[in-house]
Image (cartoon, rainbow, N blue to C red; front, side, top):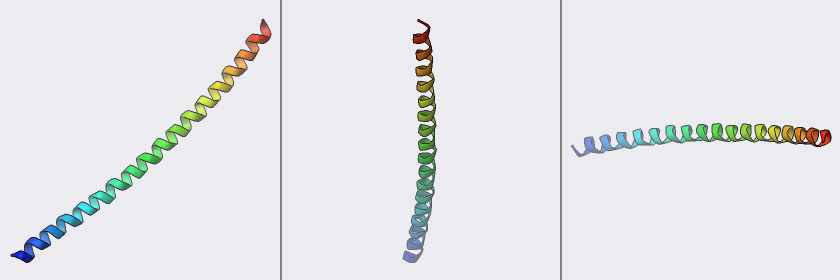
Length: 63
């Protein structure tokens, strides 16, 4: 009886460890996607700022 209970607890522990590892992997993937998105946003922001500076220079020259 005691052996059966220990086996069941060990099985539950193994399942918990596997679920934990799976979730850690998912978090790492989400982190990488987040970092990629931030990088993309920063690139777009930089392009926008450069374009706005170019437009401002054109407007100043027209005055």
